[in-house]
Image (cartoon, rainbow, N blue to C red; front, side, top):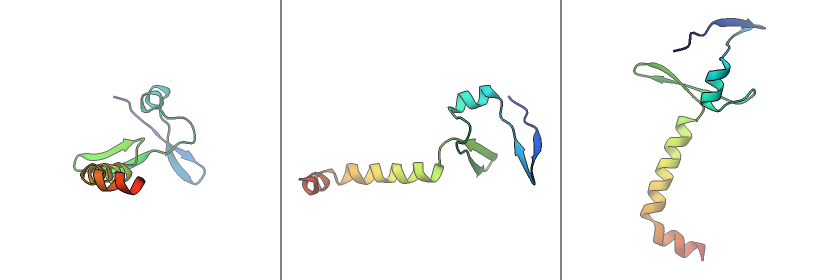
Length: 74
């Protein structure tokens, strides 16, 4: 567990992530994080959960319509 402190950054408030956390999330300066509300609080992830859901649905459709997509690709 890591304790994060809020710090003043200009007119905003920010959180500074320790190097170990950035390494575990495979993030570098300038990249985006996604804050998602969950039933247990909030989750911070390096991946867009909406995009992941859309890709899962696309994969399901592509698997179901594999033959039609193969014919269209010809």
